Amino acid sequence: MVNFNGQLHSKDSTFLNQDNRGLQYGDALFETLRVVNGKVFFWEEHYFRLMSSMRILRMEIPMEFTMEFLEAEIKKTVDANNLKDSGARVKLLITRQPSGFYIPTVNEIDFIIKVESLPDMFYVLSDKSCEVELFKDFYANPDMLSNLKTTNKILNVVAGVYAQENGYHNCLLLNNKKQVIETINGNLFLVKGTTIKTPPLHDGCLDGIVRKKLIELINGLEEFELIQESISPFELQKADELFSTNAISGIIPITKYRKKEFQVKVSKDLIGKLNARARLA
Figure 1 (cartoon, rainbow, N blue to C red):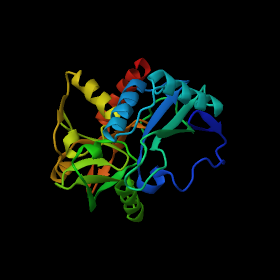
Figure 2: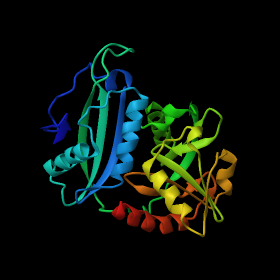
Figure 3: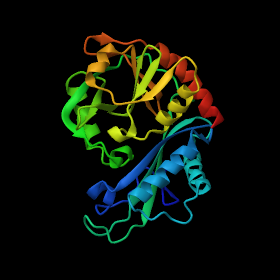
C-alpha cells in the first residue's frame, strides 16, 4: 500500500499524472527512513530537516504537518503493509502541486509515503567488498541546494551507471573544486590514525542524518578526534579506513580504492554505538 495525501492506495494504482512537478522539474524533496517495530529511527532529526528544506525551497507547509501527524501517517502506511513488527524502509516524498512551468503558480504540496521491507531489524555491517573510484565526468556545486535531499539526483544516477559499467560497487563524488564530498548513496568519513574526517556542509555534501549522529557520537569518544574538513583525492590512499553512512544502512565500509585496501576496524566499533543511539532516539 502507498499513502498519497493520507489516503491508502494499492501499489499498482495510478494517482499521479504527467503534470507532477517532481517528474517535470525535479521539484520535490524526500526523506528515507528506517522503521523498526513501529519506531522511526531519528524521527525528530528527519522531521526538522524536512521542514527546513521545504522552507528553503519556498514550499507551503500545511498547518497539519506536525511531527505527530507525519509520524502517524508513516506508521499507518507501515501497518497497512504488514510491517509493524519488522524492519521497514520508508520513503516520504514531498512534491509541489502541479501548476505553472518553471515558475509555479501555487506552492501547496502533496505527500507520498511508500514502504518496503528490510531484512535486518537494526544496522548490520556488511561483509561484502566495496571497491570505489572517483567520478570525474560531472561535479556537484558547493552550495546549500547540494545539502538538501531533493529529487535532483541525476549526478548520483549517472555516477551509478559509471560504477556498473566499470565494475565498481560505488563512486566518490567531487565538487567543482575537485574535493571529495560523498559517495553515490551516503556521506563520507575518512579515518587516519585517531583522526576521523568528514567533509563540511559548505563543500556541498548532503546534510545527512546519520552523518550528524555519528559526528555527535565520535565527539563524545576520547579515543578519536572528529574534524569537518575538505578531503582531497590525494588523501584517500593514505587513509587507514573509509566508510560512508546513510539512514538505511547506517555504516557502509569501503574496502578498496585503486590499489589501497582498507581496514574495517573503526566501522565495527561505531556500528554498535550507532545502534544504541538509534534505540534511544
